[in-house]
Each structure stands twice: as C-alpha cells, then as structure tokens.
Length: 247
Image (cartoon, rainbow, N blue to C red; front, top):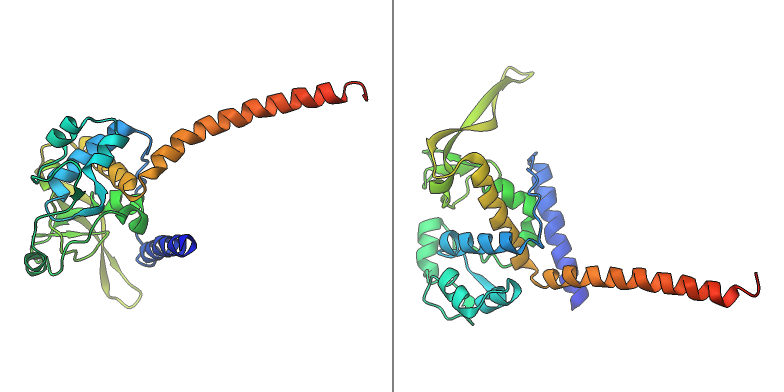
C-alpha cells in the first residue's frame, strides 16, 4: 500500500510538471522554508480567512496544527477556527456542494494535498497571476491556470492587475498575443513585496498541510546527523586504539 501511495504521489507531481512544461509556463520560485513555524502560522491564518470558505482541508484537524505549531487550544480556537467548529474537528467547509457547482461550475477541491499534486512553485505563481478579464464570470483570469473558475479571493490584498501584452507576427503573417507581465490597475491593501510574502506564507502552510509529519522528520534529522557525527568520532578513536599495537 505504501509503495502504491508513493507511486500515485510521484505520478501527480510528474503530471503537474509535464503540464506546466507543455504549456510553456515559467513558474516563479516560492523559496519556502518548511521549518519556519511562524510562516506556517501566518499562512494558516490566511488560509482560514480566505480559502476555507470554499476549500476544505478534510485530512487535517485544527488540533494537529496547534500541536505542531506549539499553540494552545485557546489560541487555535481564537486564531484559526472561524466556522464554529471545535478544536478537534477536521477542517471542513459549510458550503453546499450543489451550490458550489452552480456558482463555480464544479465543487472547489479539497486542498489537503494540493502542494504535492501541483508543487509549491505552481501555487506561488498561480496566486500571483490573476488579472482582470471582463469576459470571465468572476471578472478575472489567470496565466497559470487559464479560464479558471475560481475568483481572485485575495484581490483586496493584491489589488487588480491588467496584463501587459506583446504582439508578434508569425511567419505566415498571423498575429499572436502573449502576456509578458502585469501592471497594477487597482491598488490593494498591500504592496507587491508584502503581498508576495503573504502568498509565500500561505504556500508554506499548504506544503505543511500536504505532509505535516515532515516537520517532525526535519527536526529529528538534525539530531540523527549529530549522533552519527559523534558516533563517527568515537568509531575512529576506537579504531586507533584497537590497531595501535599493530601499526
């Protein structure tokens, strides 16, 4: 079962990478630090206030986040629980699935393992690539996920962008348009660098959400390496002592 699960995860990651490559996407580096618990905590707050209205994280409990981030139940309840749920509950949403399908075209996916399926660079680039497009139902489009059905839920923070378009004439005389960047049309609450930092924290939380046990492995790994380094020194000294009369 473990091998099958690992194979499925690898297949999802490879598929996402292949999709991005086939579409000629240039993804920005997220440069997250998974051991930065403060970043995870900030990202968790952004998630519950902006994402959890529609997207569930049904494999995670609020209490597990509190334990991993050294938060008390009172802190978890006041800072992360916004839906009337209990601290020990899974992170579900109250939105009706049929309503979601009617509003968005299909029910918003659960985000428990989205960082594994898409990759952190994809998520970081996606959340920074919404732009105004009046032809779309929610008035926005996205260069990373074309014709996405999701509204730009962070627009109050980022503001609204318009695309910078370059036109190229092909060999057969046909004109092609390519989006090469963005410029701000409506200012948001945050500057560009501040918004990028918020998105980076959110992606850090999503990466933690996809594999929460990795925090413990990373913490334990440092002690294992220190133990092995000390054991190597002792082994070397023992070897010298054992072979001193022979050499």
